[in-house]
Image (tube, rainbow over all chains, first blue to last red; front, side, top):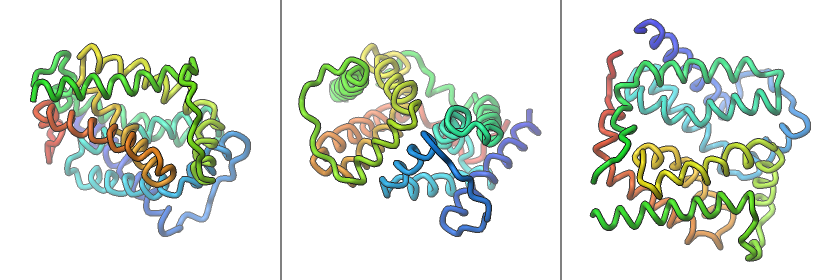
Length: 129
Length: 131
């Protein structure tokens, strides 16, 4: 489990850090061309103005946090909605990129399992104040 | 504190349940406020994706926030709903300023609940976790 968590953490952290930084620095030459619903969805997110900078900033901070192993259980929770949507986007709207979705959701879920003891408090059925 | 949390929990739960169910049943007949071009493009894009509003967001709103109302796994659902509350606030603050009161209220209620349940999150913020 130690090795699995280590690999998942580095993989997830590196992907989020690289793709987060690429949004601001544009060093990845390949940019996928989306059509139809995928394109409508993406241009909607771009049109909002605030959405992509916020998303990419979260990716960079959480990616760094995973890579240097500081607050990793928290970072794994923060990026989970992103991983889930990358998976749904790449399976429902742009199926050719499904591998990317799987490469994010699998290590993310493995981290969730590996760090489960840190989430125990959150799953209290009837919390008291 | 107990009373304040009770009120915040019921209020946030109600807001999400009502607006979540409204997506499916359209019972709020009030006219939507006019939206700016970027706001229209943003929600048009979310609708255009097909999956985002229907199976993801509203399903989550209406079904999961029910847990807030019946007070089961509240500490968990406060976290699950936070990304939505944050975006409701940002969407209204930046793109549809007429909705700022609603956005602010949702975000504040969510943050207040997170503060109230903080002891359940303390292990989540472990600096160097061991596996």
